[in-house]
Length: 240
Image (cartoon, rainbow, N blue to C red):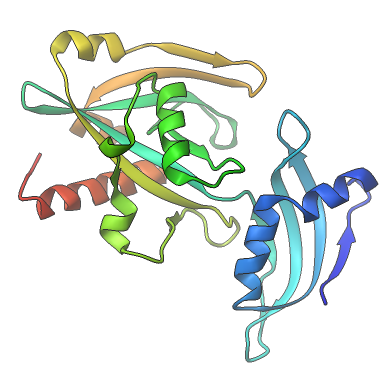
């Protein structure tokens, strides 16, 4: 039986929302299968703009390995996510369709990233990937166009790569999409803006030559997506 405690900053009415949230229950199920968890203290919670679903849950668990050794228990629970590398082939040359947006935690006003997003309540990776492509990248993609890079590289049993496994529970599943486009279509995709006021997202699409984009990346999911995509190309007998 896990002992629960809550910071005084977390309202009584919010506590059941934390315990019953999809991201927390999913995380707890996974860790309980491999660790012994005695107690969990919830330090803080941030909700989505509708205040019905937790977005980030910070907790500190008293937990042990099966042999009884204690483990570091501070966790930021946020659930899993998807990312999609969009490769546009124009005149036999590869370009990337990216999104540029401010990222306050890394003090960057123009972070260059592949389209990505956290899972919704459905936990359908492919559906979320298609939705993010439509919302962020402003392109309509059919499910059959999605190349599951994670499945290609890891096979079954791995949901995605852990971007910061010392703190975050998040695993990101990566996909790729390839399109043959004309020069005119390429230009139309560049510098389109999307604003989502409630979610405080200010996004602009950016099209760059593949290698030029790669050398500007600091976001880890971008680089891992490139690695997997290039290995997928090699497996198909292709190259950039």
